[in-house]
Length: 355
Ligand code: 1HN
Image (cartoon, rainbow, N blue to C red; front, side, top):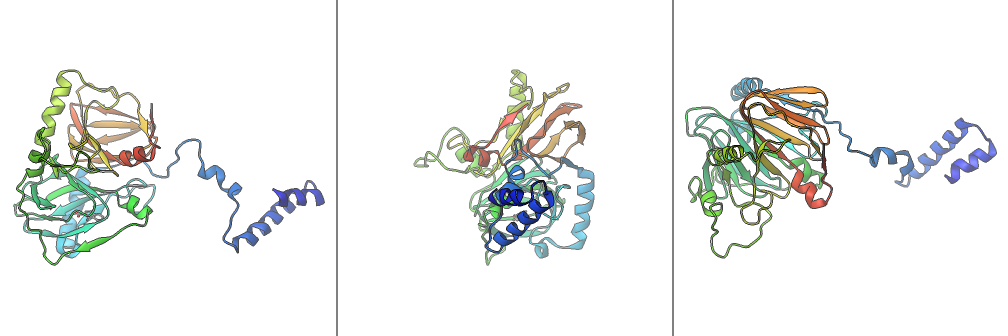
């Protein structure tokens, strides 16, 4: 301000002079690693969330055809993880579906193994298609079936394998962009290709999510101990909600995947829901600050976002960026899985929702 005023006094009315001397001033302070906030303030502190990320859909027919082709291009072993990144079309090259989340679809062919590793980023899998593959997490060997929701918390060793006879494909969502935002990424490989597992399929669900807890379990943990929330156990709960009319006007008959120890989110950085949209449901408008990734487990329909129709069917994945107003419009009874960074935003006190 002082610079502009001085310049105005020597040559009042000369915009050119003001800008020229401001520019000279900016160049001067840049040499000292300083910059004028007033030139960027409005873009930094916006009255409402602004995003370059776009609403988008990935049709499973395309994803499946193209990832099966990747099966001929590279082995799971060579790739470490044979994953097609679902790149948000508003931000290509960033390996992100939203600013805070990675999403991809992974393929494991019969006979393949994706070797054990661990990393700071937390991951979830939502199983799309193919039976016979497993993921091994923290000593539990968990079969993956369509609609299963699988947790790989940060630093948890995990490997995948497919001893079956069908290609297995699932959605991976990781908080990797969040971890990398903090520049806090570590990772580690192990000598063995696979973990030794001494917990059978379903062990953690039965042990921790049955209304009892192993005695001595701490009364709070910041992540769920459950490895797999099987669709076969979740789907009947949605039916119960529907049958008693417990149907949210925006979200349908919806459950939140919870940490059974304290009712909190499954992980501190990511939270997920499963929603049944009854036949004839016309969702009321909703928006929230957590950009959300959806996967369709059953049915088909569309979601209206800012006047645009995102058409979805079984195993399609779509993304709604932060603060975009949307409405779900199923054509038939449908089930949508969704995941976002809402727990992280809530922990920071910045999460908001509206209509
Ligand atoms: C990863 O470790 C897996 O373990 C999947 O299956 C996707 C995307 C980015 C970074 C690490 C996995 C991943 C990933």
